[in-house]
Image (spheres, rainbow, N blue to C red):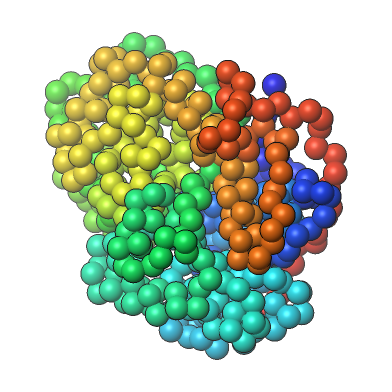
Length: 435
């Protein structure tokens, strides 16, 4: 059985050529922030490598160049520096427009309110269409209501020039329909991750603690405080557990606050602070269960999909788009947001062994393969590009094993077998340019 070709993407510098009639249908320039490498950045990274299979060559322009340039996997995708000095700095839009003309990009694809601002101006200057990708609700992205209002206002004003919106979940689509956008202007394209990465269960003796993992860019809306309170409750009951906290903190001040809380609750000795890791699979191999106790603002978390693919049980909270991937009692467990007791109850089921881990994880892995693959994500984005560019020839049946349409037929394993190795590649030199 063939696996997802993007399972090997971090180790391969070659880019697959389009399988659609063997030709490129268009060129798209993604405009991203770039200061972090978290869930949304992984979407951008994966799309850059996968879109050529569906007829679109991609480039990426960063408006806040930092961690993304160092951490990205698909280094064959051209990377450009279009630094914005502030949230409302539109001067880089002219640079972006020149880049579009010089490199002959056919459309822009923005991913954040900040990147949307200069992409909107650049699309007008260069006269190319604009697609906007909604990864999370701008009005509920942080615990700072002033910043949320500013982001939401910036997004709303800039969206006037957008030709089409991509929402990563149905809940986000409904939220933006409520803001007055028409149904034919918003398409749901679920996030996707590489398939075929299922890991064996972690071997441990009955005396060893259950290891929970949380991976995120740690900031207040991720609910780390709730998780620490749940841990304190379980440890006080004599439960054996540890936490691997994987990721960076949003700020040194927040890191100090969280670690002081952990010490005050008496759970600091049961936590391993690992820092940032670009190897998610390696981190998931070291845990028994992923926990994501988000308070609000999740579109469709990539880390949840990665845990599903890896065969790790997911405990998450019932917020925004998360329940579209995790169905309580069917392929994972859901807790009430901002409720330490509810989260502790779900974690206790794992520690005590009352949750049927095998049944839940097998269903989760199958669901990820069928609904949340890199290939299905790239195919959905390419369909939107076709629509925006007025291309009537639709992408035909795909021979990739992880591009099965949700409504299509497939074998009992949920896959279509890839008939031959991927041997048709084109290379594109890595470049970081200020146009």
